Amino acid sequence: MKIRTSLLAGLMAMALSSTGWAAVTAKFAVTLPEKSHQGQGVAKFVELVKEKSNGDIQIKPYYSGALGDDVKVTSALQGGTIEFTVPQTTTLTGMIKAYEILDFPFLFKNAEQAEKVLDGPVGQRLMDDLPAHGLVGLAYWENGFFNATNSKHPIQKVEDFNGLKFRSIQAKITQETIKALGANPVPLAVPELYTALETHTIDGQGTPNAVIAALKLDEVQKYLSITRHSYGAFIPLASKAFWDKLTPEQQAIIRDAAVEARAYQRQVARAQSQSAREKMAKNGMQVNDISDAERERMTQAVRPVWDMFIPQVGQELFDQVQAQLQ
Image (cartoon, rainbow, N blue to C red; front, side):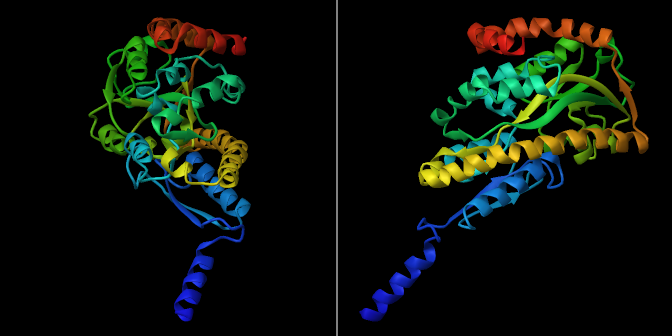
């Protein structure tokens, strides 16, 4: 009896961390490859959590969509079968309409404006709605400004979008933006994108430069046009079912690590955007900028999309964003 009691005590001691917590292991689902700006942000986050917890919180990343696309893994977080993921905020618009405010086309002129909104009261207000849906938001990271690629011709003016079969995600605001620009939206998940472009099932798509390079889309697209038509933010999420089992100290470590990794991830995103543009141009992709006058014409073309979605996000929230941008 004494031996069995001693053995049980030993096993319990092994299961406890140096701080007295139960050791924690978790899975982190990542859509993009490890070397992408998203992947590097996750790697930094995992490293910081391990360091801050003295190795007692171990998080294993699964890169390149190994556990599924953003919609699937976000649902898995809600069900408690995966602990972390970092989708673009657009993924959340199906459950929280207010997140559509971040997808308004040509809303942000530069990254500084985006940071002002995301890291301030608006960003926190949006995150406050997540726990009711089984999710916990930790911070906002950067995907970057979206630029258009296609296999037909350079996009230099809004009319150049006309008739293009253009990849879209499921979010209605993205589809309406593509329509407003004159192209035809074709919903596709990221893992299907390369093949669809290669086989000309679709003509083009819009993602940040770093994502275009990470997914090797320059191999199947000839033209890159710096439209900057939308800004994409990533949001590291934790499963609330998992989160609620953690101690306040563990929660603080995880949240602090996500915020601390934010500056690093954004720096990587911006460096990769520039280097990706240069590398893809060097490899033969034709890259063109958009004049201020033509970007303004594109902005005016999508204003009906703003009018369509302001009632959904709420006039008061829209006004709050505009006040911050002013």
